[in-house]
Every structure is written in structure tokens, then in C-alpha cells.
Amino acid sequence: MDVSPGESAPRGPLSGVRVLELQGLGPGPFCAMLLSDFGAEVVRVDRPSSVTDADPTDPPADVLSRGRRSIAVDLKAPSGVELLLRLVERADVLIEGFRPGVTERVGLGPEVCLERNPRLIYGRVTGWGREGPYAPHAGHDINYLALSGNLWSIGRSGERPVPPLTYVGDFGGGGMLLALGICAALAERAGSGRGQVVDTAMVDGAALLNGFVYGLRDTGGWTEERGANLLDSGAPFYDVYETSDGRWVSVGAIEPQFYRNLLTLLGLGDEPLDAQNDPEYWPILRARLTEIFRTRTRDEWCALLEGREACFAPVLSPWEAPRHPHNRARGTFTECHGRTQPAAAPHFGRTPAGIAGPAPHPGQHTGAVLREWGLNAAEIGALRELGSIAESGTESSAAAPAARSTL
Image (cartoon, rainbow, N blue to C red):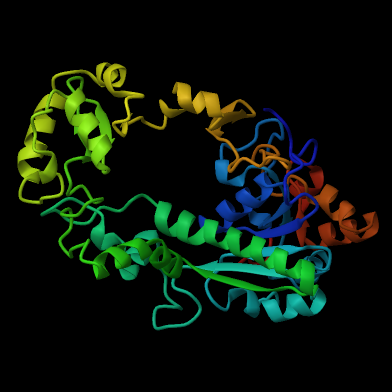
């Protein structure tokens, strides 16, 4: 796939929905990427200070920014704020991921935007949320996981907690939850005709993703000890093992029938099946599994265990995963502008999702978007003269005065 945003965007389930994304990091861009993959027209609002004389045929290698166009607007200039409010009038969704109070201070808070467009879905995401003692302070994914109770459980017995990259806070509990909230608000608006604020906090989302642990805890199925439970590397039949070539394989044989198959295939058919869930037996089984998996290479184990109902898979690197036959068969990965990346998901039966194009350079589409969204040439020229907007790869962007200040 090799398209430019706006040229041949997929007709996904959100086709016809217009989204304004205020430039941010992590969860906001991930949310905007999902909405774009679902067919929405997403326009990212960048800072004029980010604009360079970039080559439009060489897009940035930024997967989270794929599938949208970019305009550059100074949101601390009154003319820039008024411009954005004019765009809000034509938008369905606005996404912002600043600290609490930032958009309100520059005149772009939800009350102002909803007054200009009562049908607007105002999506916002913060780390700590908008209330509480931590709300005004800085933080990152690791901090939100720590406070939500998630980070405690991730790690091996006797060792310190291990951050799971930024999957749980930024992306799962932040961006994906915001996208779900926006889609729900759009569905509600179809009946009520009214917009609303979707207020997402990563600490809330991370806690929500941890709900199953609380259910297991309350039924005696989860202890406070890290690395001693069924799904946290405590159980030897749900873990990863090193192979003879220094690679790794995963097993997740929780159910008795899959556990039995795994032991039989490994030559451990004489192991006591009724001891599977006995924590006192786990060290014995782990030692045997560790020893056995080190006798063959990862590929040799794949040849023996794949497709044998033993809940097995090789541990692939991000460089290997796109080449695996299963991922190739499903189209789990794709290419956009010559760069391999995860494909749009999930799969829709009637309105397919898809990547609308590569990431834009900041300000790459300022003029085109403003014309499409209702501004005339004189208005656009006046904003350029003021330095309230900029566009990459043009004389006007190079000559524009520096932005006075930015968010």
C-alpha cells in the first residue's frame, strides 16, 4: 500500500467523520491513528515552530502519525485560536492530550468549543485525570501503572516490577480507551444530536485493564506475591523458555487437555496431571521444562509443537513477526510508503478499515485543508502574513515570522 492522505482513503466505518487532533504525544496520536484507520478524516494541528522545508515525497517514519494531514497553527495567537474555532464548527471530533487547564487557558476548552459546535465530541486524555492530588503534576506511563496497581504484578518472583513498555497506560488504557469513548459518543449523538466531552485518564484506563486481577483476588485465585500466580510467570505451563540456539518459545497450556498434550509431546507423559495447579509442584515441573526446551532450537520446537493443541508459539522479535506465515496469511502487517508496520485492525465485514497514507510533515497540508474547510485565499494569505499559520515546503512557510509562543 502506498497512498497519500486524502487521495484514496479507505471507506471505513467512520467515513465522513472529521477529526481535529491537537499535536501531542502517545495516547492522543494513537487514538487519532485508530480513527483514521477506521475511515475518519483526521487533521493534525501542529506548531508553526515544527514546520521545515521538508520533502513531501519522503514522509516521516512515524507509524502513530499515519493517515492524516497536518496544518500548522499558532494556538497562542488570537487569530490562530479563532481559526481553530472556525474549524471546530466544521468538525465532528477534537482530540487533545495536554495537562488539565491548558486548552482552557488559550480559549479552546470544551465549553468554548461546544458553544461554537454543540455536536462536537471533545475527546481529551491526561495521565492522572483532571481531579485529585496528582492531577496538575507531570508523569509518564510507568507512573500511571504504578499508581493504578498494575505495575506491581508485572515481574518475576523475588525481582522488581518490570515496565511493560507503554502498552498498558499510553496505548491500551489511554489512546484505545479514548477512541472507544469517542466512537460511543458518536453513536449516542446519532440519536440525541448533541456532542459531549469524553474525558480519559491513563491511570483510570490502566486500572480498568487490571479488573480481572481483582476478580481473581476476591475468589482466592491471585496472591499478592509477584510471579507466583497463574498468569504472571508463576505457573511453569504459562511461561517462556530458552531454546538451544538462544531464542525463546512460549507455552500457555492452562486447560487440562492442552496441558496433557504439551507434556506428551515433550516426553513427560508420566508427570502427574492432577498436580498441574499445585504451586508446590511448580518448581519441579519448571526445572524439567527448562531442561527439555534447551535441547532443541526454536525452529525445531516449532516443527514439533505448532498446530498440536499445546498452546505454543515462538517468541518473535518485531523484525521477525511480519514474516511469519500466520501473520502474512492474515495481513497483520502491511507496507505504507515502503515501510512495514502493523495493519489496521480489527477487520470489518462491510466497511473495511485501512491505512489512509503515511505520516505527514508538520504543516504539509495547511493551505489545502483550510481551503477545503471553508477559508478563502484572502483569509489564508492574511493568516500567513500574521505568522498564525505555516506550511512546509513553500516559500510562505520559509518567510513566515516565528510563532510567538506555542502550547
